[in-house]
Each structure stands twice: as C-alpha cells, then as structure tokens.
Length: 68
Image 1 (cartoon, rainbow, N blue to C red):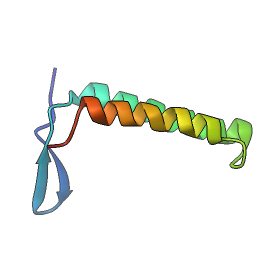
Image 2: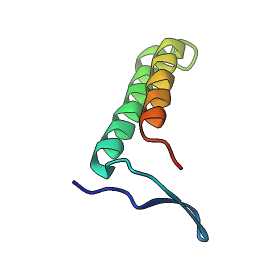
Image 3: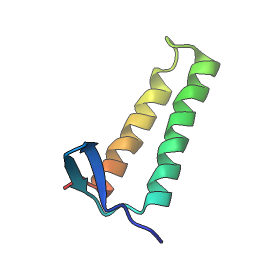
C-alpha cells in the first residue's frame, strides 16, 4: 500500500496526509462519476439529492483522512 507524503498546495507549500493514495483516488473518482451521472439523468435542476448525498460522503472522507 502506498501513502501520500503530501498534498501540494502550490510550488512552495506541501500539506502532509496519511490517506492511502489508491483508495482515496478511487473514491474521489467514484464521487465525481456519481455527480456527473446524476446530472445526465436528472439535469442540473434535479440533481440536488445526488449532490447532497455526495457532499455528505465527501465530508466523511475528509473527516477520515484530514489534511494536517
């Protein structure tokens, strides 16, 4: 298992993290796909429920792997 050493904020700033890279990248990709699929199915005006569910999962992911 590989771990991120840091998240680069800009060329001079690096924030350490302990999230396993393969896990979080896959999860982020899945979350993006859910929102995009919802937009295709529901349109921009009808996608609020999907976006709210994804927002909660993002909050939990950030809580589990905080940037510190």
